[in-house]
Length: 348
Image (cartoon, rainbow, N blue to C red):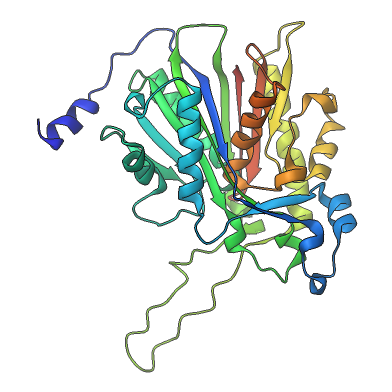
């Protein structure tokens, strides 16, 4: 059979199955080897461990080395998620990767995953959603499963923001780390399990509050003498005060909306898995929410803000430690550049 025939066969939509839902059946994550603690930042940055911890809650973060990138981290996280699901690469029907730091613009990280994992010629693509990216790709995967087009989807969030930072700017460089996380979403007929609610929002009018210019579109080709030289490529920048206000309001609104749309049964366990951004933001949101601190899954003290990897990394660790378990009601809530924000409520 030709490659084209095989490809066409994989694209034939399955008939819609009444009552199909998508459930998390496997999780995985991958971290760079290098750990950078607060005191490792140079003295010229005019900061220290106490200054960073009290303002962010972050103690250390992982940064990629020369042989690590968003593709290598995401590939390993995906392998682990597939193994945890008890599946093989041949079972995967779609791969979607959330990243703003792809290894190459083309081919996409997701296409690279498909080739290296040895999957069939299935659809695979990247999505740019900044720190909300994982919510975007989870929602996309959920729609493919509900429609009957796919049974098993590999969803990856992978970013290496350390390569976008100005390490003389303490307002940004102390916040971010590198990581990848992944889940496998699979079709289920169990009505007490799976994704129950999704919401996504954007406000491009305030997009400049968080900016990370492209290394491609901000470079001007110099073809002959006298043409403008390529400008200096700026780093990630953000308006800390305004982003703080936006993030608190977004997180509070998402939790309130999710709990109103999907009330948690009496006696059931409910946990919030938020984008791991800043302890002060989460603390400020909790003051307005009917949640106890122990209901919030956190690991930002060890990894900082890992963008699209943030939520799946926290979820994978929570699953591994037993912090979350089968039957728990989880709200994954994120907010970030775009501006974007969104959430997914599911029963594990």
